[in-house]
Image (cartoon, rainbow, N blue to C red; front, side, top):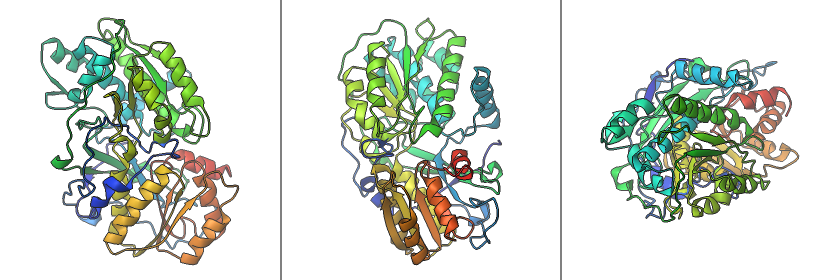
Length: 479
């Protein structure tokens, strides 16, 4: 990989006034990353009319050239040209990704094929560890320091450098691998950095076409932090638990998240640990909202005495366990929740996330469509908080911009087939198609290809739930 150029999405995000109210979870309402449900502290939610600040976007020629949407069907490369977004920090370098991957393989794991949320998982561990150093405890009081670690202090980028500032009595501003963070009072980023990804002729992400877009929220969206309301004493040993997808519809996100988390823990322990002792770690599976795995794992981790749980990846899953975790006085920090429902959730001051909310992502996708010059769009999405939330944001922004939305189709992610849904796309004959899916997206796309309206015929756009090599692997395997 290479360092990617950064652009700012500005005037294209015209209808962002609709964003705050429109978004939902990342997974099924009972799970979707609580779409990105970042259960935020019970602070006043920003007004729906407040949109992320628009900065002037560079000329469209700075972006990778749009793929020819009228290319003939070929044998292989059926996904070529499909583009979409995933939250990604602007500072992620080839060297860092390679180091994480090498460390992961050295532990006996398969090589990573996706790196989504690896940086966010790494930063979640770092922020929690630094907060414990400031609070001088691994108890629940460390939650009061998390927002401050990310802003308004002396900038530092490594655990060693940040700890040196803390030891000297200074205030730190940790700028992580995933970006500067700069948490709002509700424990979520005030800005979003997104990688724009595109599939190549091998049905895998073409890293040479990757670039970054950034959007920022206005000062009017800043809210006061909620203090921790549950007292839990620490024992002097900071212990992490993970609640990440080893199984379920977001299982492809598990390896990079586990890898980023373990890499951070190894670095911290190599530097002497936290509070003078090594950090401990207990791994756990979150599954998805179709199972009770997250609840069982949460009970186990709480019983083991963990101080902080990194996860869940799905906002929907987060929403099923956030109450039991935060009421136990345990910090819950998601690297991937994007659901707006979590922004003003009553979380006892103990829920945080470093992935930006879905409203920003939906607006970015809409901006790509506008920038590419399409005049009509069909949107197909999972019928859950994640899919419905992002779909509405995209639809609203496009409509506000004068682009015709020919269809807004929510589908059952557990359906046996998607022939009828794809037939509706064929009948609508849009310029472009937005597919907001998880792993079932490969079956939708295969059906679209078979019916002559796949990504090699129409321009397709995706989101973080499907923009990864796992989609291409599943497609090729007929899954």
